View (cartoon, rainbow, N blue to C red):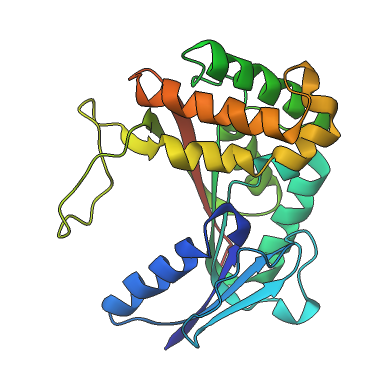
Length: 252
């Protein structure tokens, strides 16, 4: 049996790495899948990929009519900056529509109310900038509370939320045979400072279009700020990020 799966926000990864890794992992378990991957831009679509993975430019708030009751699993991650209350509700309704009865939705997002990666003067400036960006865009703060309620209101059942904490800092070398998450000594998942800086680097255009929010004035200044933040995160063990993984099932 072939399972149809949906992955949204390819642009949060480099060259669709989540979709490629996920498809490879599932194939190693002997499962057959067809994976549709979407984003509002094609700039992170990989040039080469297996034939069972399809990439297309679409919005998660307006999925094709013909996808109704198609997918057994729908995955979304790190759309927080692009979403407000009305868009989240549109997304939840679309996920409910395109999933088959009994199918599962998974949303992976970060905490936006209490940012804990300001560990020095430069990263504290970045936190101030992000908070102002969130306020200007109407970003929902505590997604660990908001998203489970949203999915329940959309008709999903068996809603649950798992909280995980990542420490932002230097990457920890690991053996090639180790398939688990990188962990720091305090057992937090390690989020590399390079990845975390590149993630916020993707916000350069909205930051500059917003006037820099009183923190930066030019794209070059924003790039330097992120470089300085990387150094602070590499030299600290206190920079943390909170992730929420919210899962919910469409009733049978």
